[in-house]
Image 1 (cartoon, rainbow, N blue to C red):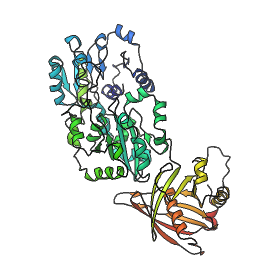
Image 2: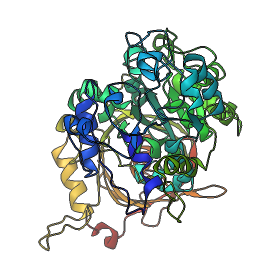
Image 3: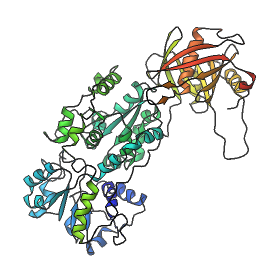
Image 4: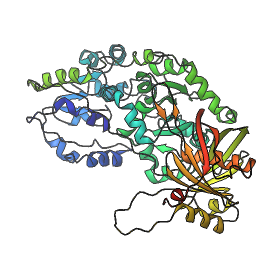
Length: 543
């Protein structure tokens, strides 16, 4: 259903066109398909009514079902990134999904008036199973890819919406069925969030709509709960997944179509497909995976996941993956115009004067579950402090537990060596009660005997900390300046560095004019930090 929404710009601005949607019976995923149409407030009609009526044009994104019962010229649109896999138990069983003669030409007759294909090679493959259908085909490209390509300049905007910052955005892409990544490696999302340092990588999961529909949104979220709680973002099935691909640095994938869209954007592709009967040898997807670095099986990931991702990112060369996408997608940048030419020809109408333009992808939603407690590893060498944060449930050795007071669980707050609180934005109500950073830090140390350092995050560059000695110290954080951007650290990560450094250097700084400078290494970047006694005005700042 999402494919049909992506082709709507073909008819944009044309008052002669009325758009109606119906659902062909027999799909295992019909509930979510109808929900997708309802979300965009489209007009739907029951299948029985659709069978009784005649239409000027019928658009379908799949040949399956009783399309032949609908009256009117039928156009079969590109679905997925070509014909790369078979689906056992459907149709002929050994045919590529989308090219099965049982669906393409039921009863020996083509089911569609026009087969809109994404690449010339697909015409030849269609001819091998149905010469009459191939004679009614046209290469128009892929309308969904058009949206990704049109949105490339919004990459920074999407990353900002996700809260990526200077981290590497790592996408885990799973298709559906028994050979999908989630079926074969169900622990991988939790491994990504648990083993990748939080300040260096941001993991996002893309799940095929069929799998989301089969599992159910609630059950899927519960299965993924440990990873979601640790910071994994679950991208939405329509538009959001595409915006995430535009924002991504690397994609870990099985044999689903998402990988070829990532390749068209020239992203680093890492194969995590362990073989099986579904992937068709010699297909664009098979070639892409064969020439991509392979992620080891789950039993061999310990200690090597970050290294494997970094190696793939370092080995990537501009244009390398795009060459494989070029064997699946033609007419890049022109797909909507090509499709408009074909469908308006069938309608016998002149197309609108304004060009058919792909609609930009909206920004993705940020994670609704932001980690609030971390197991922190620290290495101190003089004034150089390296910090690596992992989810609180990590079983790796850690220097201390850091928790955000008021957000983390009370269990984590009771166990934390460092408790911090971020300055709240003003509430909508004019009635507001606040506490000074001096009072709040003193109260936290009184309430939590196990806590050694309490801190208020007043801004991305200013914090105030209080240790068990009672001294208030101001922490000023400088960003990391790179060639074309300025990268800010999460102040909470810097506070872990300060907490560890103060623990290793008790009593410093104590003089009224003392200023100490340290360097925090966070996510592979250096952030200069200045520590000084807090002034009376700074102590009165509120949280």
